Amino acid sequence: MDWLEKELAKALERKEPSPDFAAKLTARIESEAPRRSRLFHFPRWMPAAAAFVMLATSGSLAWRRHQGMVAKEQVMLAMRITAGKLNHVQAHVREAQQ
Amino acid sequence: MIELERVEETSCDFATLVREHQAMVFSLSYHFLHDRDLAEEIAQEVFLSLHKHIADIKSPEHAVFWLRKVVVQRSIDETRRKKRRPQVALELVAEPAAASSRDSDPLLGEVLRRLIATLPETPRMVMVMRYQEDLDPAEISELLEMPLGTVKSHLQRSLALLREKLQRRGVGDY
Image 1 (cartoon, chains in turn orange, red):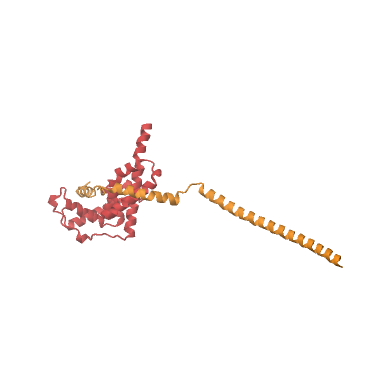
Image 2: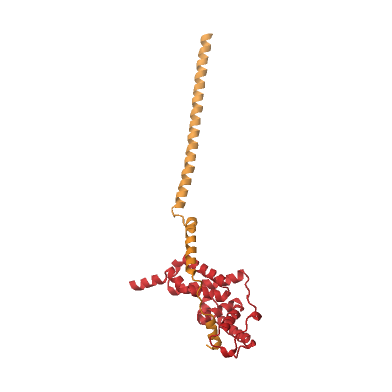
């Protein structure tokens, strides 16, 4: 190592950062930690739970739609039976009047 | 065995790594960028990144290699992002003291730092690695992922350039 290289080694000696370097770093780590955990570190069971809720909701909707259709058919059948009975009674009344 | 594990565990502890290597990380960036505030900001980012990747660090030696590699990359990226060409023109660099007072001349140190700051990115980083970190050309070659011959060539050319600049200013016989 010649004289210039020795001077370069002296000129490029390591220097310390500001005294509050570590404190600033700690503050930055603490300020970033909760935000990251909220955004990206959700529990592993979360996707499975979300899929279950979606399936349950869509299943419930389909079941309610089916129940509605069954009720509608029962009402229509009851009305047809009632109409038939009424026609029968009306025919008897007409015969009695004649 | 247990004792060794304990020592290794302590050495890779984040707080210990910051305390032991903050001067190295800060200085690499500072000597490359010649900007104290920016160098400190980059050093902070490097340690934040280390904090996120602390689980990947296998040993204290790996930590040093990792820190050097990341600070080099961040400093070069910063230079390119801000298109920071040499901040100080060679003509504006102060005249160093006369050659007769070579011993511990603080002005000469500043002149050398400023002259290094005017070198292109790659040779500048090679010079900083060589004279700040005292790495040999093979270690620099591995760290910067560059052929050994290229590292040696950068070192020789940069030294020749510095000698020429200093001689031109009548600093002495180098």
